[in-house]
Length: 199
Length: 322
Image (cartoon, rainbow over all chains, first blue to last red; front, side):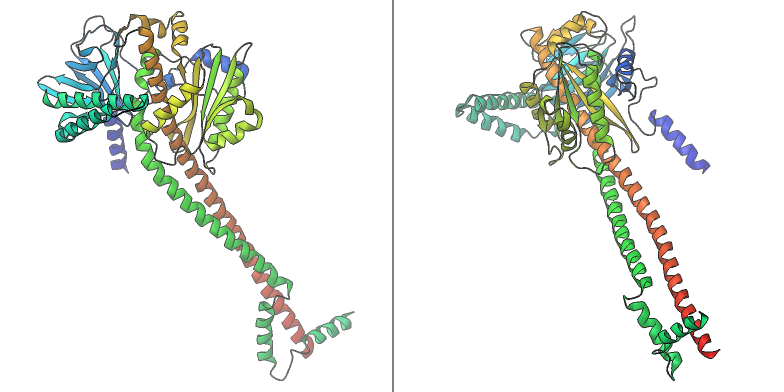
């Protein structure tokens, strides 16, 4: 029984999380104004929780520029990188490749299909992502939200070439606006894929 | 009177008592129990039937619990992975559930199938309470309902307020593409200043918290930015990409809605399976208790009937002897 207890304790300490839920913050904050107005109108039912109750606490804005930037890279079905400290990230914004270093001005960037590269020391990890958004906050935290992302070495170059040829052909033979738009998107993504693989 | 009783006993036992009295008595005992004439054997039959049906119910609910447990395992992994999706948006735009806007749209997420405890009722209660909270002069609140159960409950008293209702969400396994198409549908067809998504957040297998997530339209964001807070800092962010700031903000709003909706749908599906597990568990436990009680009744009835038979025979035999 003591062995079990110590194992459980080690597990909890190691994970740094509560055993049941994965995102209860240390001190849950909830919108008190909402709770007050709820209790006034509906006194019998407990007010529902809001996302701020479950938000993981974020670091405060430091006074001096920190040495590393914290990256959260999330996809709908996984969190690829969560609070990872890196030196630099290069994101494929619609206005071109954007390098983000610690101490970057706060920005909201819309992303186009392209390569995201994460530089930490000497290793560079490259992901190809479909579109998404990137937020860079004043406290040197970068949130990158993409719909799909794959590591570059998992992509098959021959399939990318074939896809590009297929969509260019579809674009030329498209009749309705919808088909044209779809073919256009396919062409953009595949040409970005090809340039990512070659460049 | 004693003579009359004895005469009655004698008349009853007369056809049974013969030179080979013992074997006759034994065969009569057996025939009396099987024949559906006596009241005693009918009551054991009734109890036996009830026991059979309760045992079947127990088996079925146990099987449903196992199925729900396996489905929960599969979907819990996906729900936990999708939890990182809405955090950046709340970190950027803050959480404004008490926002005061003209057009509110409440998106209620519920299940299609029943037997899942009270989670659908809590969602509907929360939605109705939210509607009451956000009501006011020249403000309107509409519903968008996902799932059969909430639709059935809301259609009873708010039929004209339901803009859109979507069912059979989980026919194919939930994925982001499907949810983003759904979100697109909702955004196109419904006018809104604020969208409030009501769902049950999966805390643990026994605990589901009703949660409301708010997504504002770009115009509402601009208006709220004037009040300061998280949204007020939005101006300090440089906007990259797109021609105008409002275009990027609109894309941002739509993306936020589809991400938050995806997480909400997954969490609600998790909560549904967990609630079904605990409902079926308590149901099979109740069936087990009922079965124990019925077994006791059955044994009592059976023993009582045997005792009565014995008493009759023995008293009859002793009456004949003495």
